[in-house]
Length: 371
Image 1 (spheres, rainbow, N blue to C red):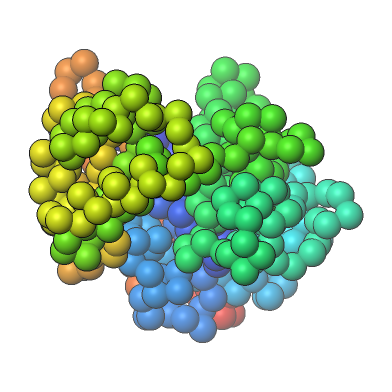
Image 2: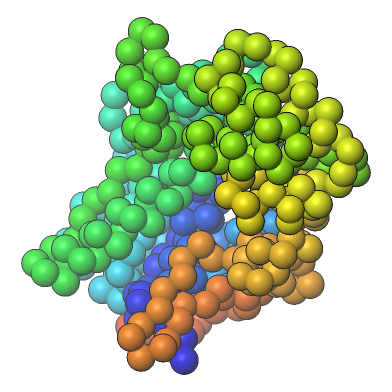
């Protein structure tokens, strides 16, 4: 039996970029019905975000020409049948076109509207363009991750953090609706979501924030097979277990000598003598904090990943499983939705019917090329 806490929640997704796509796929994993709104010019093509299966799975697709004069009329008729709207348009632009939060709220007072933008809905940067590195840099998170001016993460971080922030906010808004009947407008800034990650730092917004340096007890080490291990034996107990497991008991009392490069060199020399998996299997059970450093497809055969089912297949492509693992007292569990995305427009008629439009109205809209 599957646990789907958002079952019955209908989400209309207007986003064309990863923040909204990641947000809505997580909502789908929690049981929501997610419908992407796409251009009729794409009918019949796979409904994907940048061709990425992981961000596109489990969603339905309807077509609507947002440039058509009747598009707002259609959306306002749909609004009573919609629980959540997700969009990434410029602040105020959807309202100006006739279907923004003010109009949607009037048609459905319980609607949750989630706007995801780079810098938020107001302020001097509200309409500034950017990419992930823009929001990481502005938030201060990039500077906390690496001091080298040329450094930038190889994957998007602000995008994922913003998406997760949106998921939390949407669920809170749905809870508020259940309590009061009132909908909410959610203003999610990717820069602010990234900046919130500094919360776990020490004096993160001071002139001299505390950074975690790479020291002998907390760093990556090379192994004999070309793989790496991440050592995080930063406490006396875990450091002692590491040193004894490596045959270096003389270093057990030198955890605090972090200015001496000879300690890291000694640890590195021993770790180079065996494959990474050997060290994890040998040392981790003793209490040493050591784990393998996976990269790319290496994760697919990782014992912990395999045991937990942390990777699933969608249309033959491996993708990360949902990070949500919910279980009920009765034994029902949440599951990752592995259904491939619909083709563009496959769900137009069914969605409109479910939102209260008649078949005659739909036929008229199709004849006028609104859909």
